[in-house]
Image 1 (cartoon, one colour):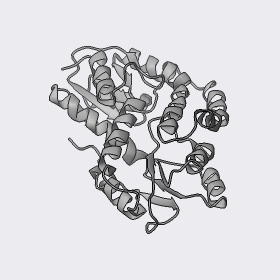
Image 2 (tube, helix red, strand yellow):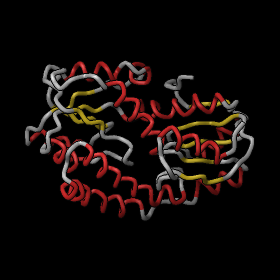
Image 3 (cartoon, one colour):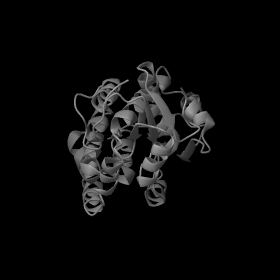
Image 4 (cartoon, helix red, strand yellow):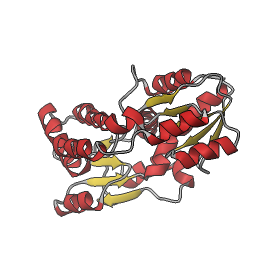
Amino acid sequence: MLDTQQIMKTALKLARFNSIPADSEIHVKGRKLRRVLVAIDVGVSELLLARNLNCDGVIAHHPAGGKAQLEGYKVFLRHIDQMKAAGVPSEVARQALKNKYRVLDIQHHPENYDQVPNAAKKLGLPLVTIHSPCDEIGRRMIVQAIKGLDEDATVGQLVSRIGAFPEFRDAETRIEVRLGSQNRKAGKAVISHACYTNGGYDVAKAYFQNGVGTLSYIHISEADLTKLAAEKFSNLIVLGHIASDWLGINRLLRELEKNDVETVATTDLHKS
C-alpha cells in the first residue's frame, strides 16, 4: 500500500525528475491505497466508475484539474532542452516554441479547473494527475529501444524497433510514417515526447534544419503536417497518442503493483 505522495515520488524517480512538473499534481491526498483506477482522461464519470469498482483512489494521466490543468502547458518549455541535446541552437529552439506556447497559455486560461478535483473531494476519493513523468518514462524506453541503430538504418527498421513494445503491437492505431518513407535512411533520430504536447510545425522545422533525419511525434495536427510536407522536409513518424501514453503509464503501474497496489486500468493496453 502507498499514499498519494509515494505514488507521485515513484513516478518522479522512474522519470528521473527532481520535482513535480507543472502538468502533474496531487489533487486530493490519500493514504494506504490498495486499489486504484487508472485512466488517461478522468472526469466525474471515471470517479463514479472508480467508486463502483471499489477503488480507493484514482490516477489520471492528462491533467484532471487544478493548477495542472491551468498551468501544465509550461512543461512545453522542455522542448528547448530536448532540441539543444539534438544540436539545435538555443535561440533557434526558443523561437520555435514562442508561437505555440502563447496559444497554449490563452487556450487553457478559461478551462473548468475546479470541477473534477472537487467532485473527488465530495466522493472521498484521492486523485492524482501524473502526466509528463509517465511520458518521460515512455520516451526513455523508446530511446533505449532504438539505441544501437546507426544512421544507415532505414526508417522501417526504426519503426520496427519501436513497434516491438506490446502497447504499440496491441493498439488499434499503427505507427505511421507521415513524411518520408520506410525505405529512406533514418539518419539522426530524435524522440520528441514528454513536453506536454507535440511541438508542431515550428519545432519540427527547427529539428530538420539542424541535422535531424527522422523525428518522432506521438501526434500532429493536419495543418502542421501539410506545412511540413510542402517544404519537403525529412522523415516524420507518428507513434500514436494512446499507445505512447500507456507505454510509460504501464511501467509506473508495474512498480506500484510491486508495492501491493492493485491497479484497475481503463484499457486493454495495460500490461501487468
